[in-house]
Amino acid sequence: MINTSLKIKKSEGAVYEPIPENTYQVQIVDVKQVERQTQYGLKQKFQFSCAVTDDEEYKGRLVFVSVNVSWFNGDGGKRPSALFNLIKTIYAFYKKDVKVAEINEVTGEMVNDLIGKQFIAVVKVNDKYNNVTDYMKIKKEVKYEPKKAQGNENVNPDDIPI
Image (cartoon, rainbow, N blue to C red; front, top):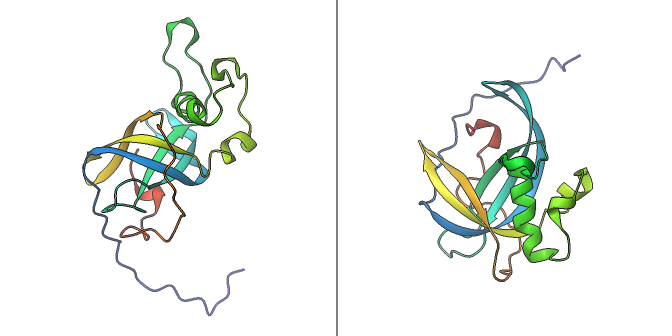
């Protein structure tokens, strides 16, 4: 039962100014498993919150990467899953000895282990939101301590269209 003294105040939506299209080195600061309605039905997704680390003007700003909870390495000429490509990109720097194509399953522990790891995000502007369209391996890690987000701390990743 809800407490009858509960009061919910009207709030105005946060203003989100996307960062310019570019490539940015980012660090994964959080990941959540969410359900999203897509044109193909309800899908499980991983929502990665990533902070810009290498651009002084946008350092700490968040971009979000949303990938289906699916694991496919591209055998048979089919396109690999976005989760496969993200992990492959990150492991190319942090776990060079792991053959990602030979991983048969992804665990929650593996996904959580991506927090704190960095990659290069290709960021595009889609309507009024940033969209990460590709990932690339970093050359070296940029020292970054996550802080409160700058300028978009009130953005709810659930409000960003996929």
